[in-house]
Image 1: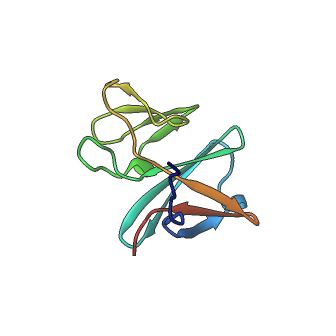
Image 2: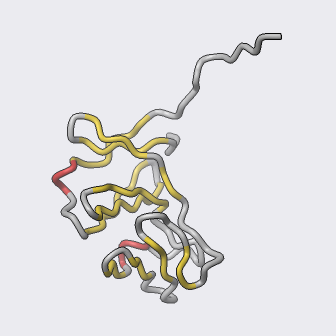
Length: 113
């Protein structure tokens, strides 16, 4: 029996900035449709996350980025900025957002409208 699947219904991509807007080792926050986005650039690679700390919703951009360690300013929870995995506490993690770079512009998927 053959399985037939319908067309892919991927959420639209929303442009948030240009590649040159964020330097290596920096993070920046953007708001799209009332959704906070955190972009981090490390080693030339971009990583996008929900911009609020999973602990109590503090703005992650107000925290500190030291190497690949992102520390939330509110209660000092720490995350690996490359993977989103929790460092302290380990059981936590950041919500990763899919991103694509198209013609030098960073676009994020799945933000709704």
